[in-house]
Length: 411
Ligand SMILES: *Cc1c(COP(=O)(O)O)cnc(C)c1O
Image 1 (tube, rainbow, N blue to C red):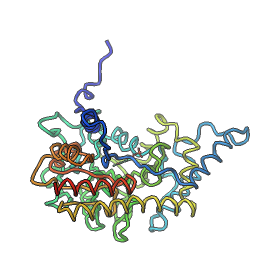
Image 2 (cartoon, helix red, strand yellow):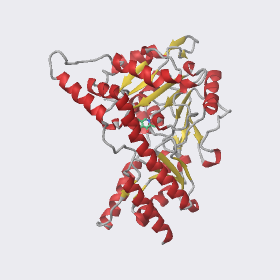
Image 3 (cartoon, rainbow, N blue to C red):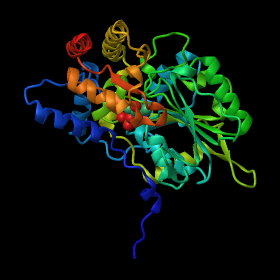
């Protein structure tokens, strides 16, 4: 009898986007002529930039020749990309990393989900709430989160991020967390963290011998010069933090698949006996066994992002998304809504008016203005009473959506 990993049965069915799609479909059946605008998707829409496309074509052509063919590459990624990362993403900010501290992957989702498996099963984890669902679910799969009761797992510290605390979670004093997930700029709230705030987390981790798993998937959207793009801009972070980066939102790689994880060599975790173990070595061992590297073509594509043309072109696309976010912020504010984020992130987090529930507002907006948002509840209990808008849609669609919301409100 093959027995199931019962922890998987402890997962909550994450129906958020399926439920959204179902409700939109019902609406479309009832109103076949309606033109629904989605501001709910968490995927980019603009094509790959020319520099990237050219590099990919070139890589494919190489693969078509005997001399240029590439089979298995290093599990940790090709040096050309890891060097480009050091030189472009970290050195200009005064961060000196070693090539061996960079692990190329097929996107940040894999590593944010997998990283927990090198840690003991009963570490107590902390997550900001609302949150990217991967952090909790991947921990549930290994049996780390206790049981689900009401709207939460029993053995997880949920750190509420709401308008009341400016979306900056308090550090809980009652029970020490051993592993902390932080994501800035944040999905879904669009909040960013200052150096001072992030220093508090690093200090906490150093004092409590905790590990911070820092998701910087949206760092390319930061426009404010004082906002840290990397946790390694913070004193002491190399001793307590891993950082995840992705080219998905940076350069439209959601369908190409490439990202990387930084695991400093000075980072260690403990055995019960107090022996210190190198996280870099553990992760390297894990990747060498379970991962065979990102494709050569994806890595050449990623390398091209760092060329002057690549930098310029990707920044243009990000500016386009940020301009869309600004248009939404302006319109929604003018309509009297309370909106957050959207300045250094592609997400706008909006308080639902009149205290309506996030699903209720979602339906009202769909039926009233044929505009789709994402109910905040789907990202965690503190998301109730909020909805998320994304700025990945074309500007014409955003403008039209805003006009409709205005007409709906004046109705
Ligand atoms: C989109 C996203 C990622 C990146 O996922 P990829 O696997 O690199 O496409 C990681 N973290 C968060 C919070 C995200 O929203």
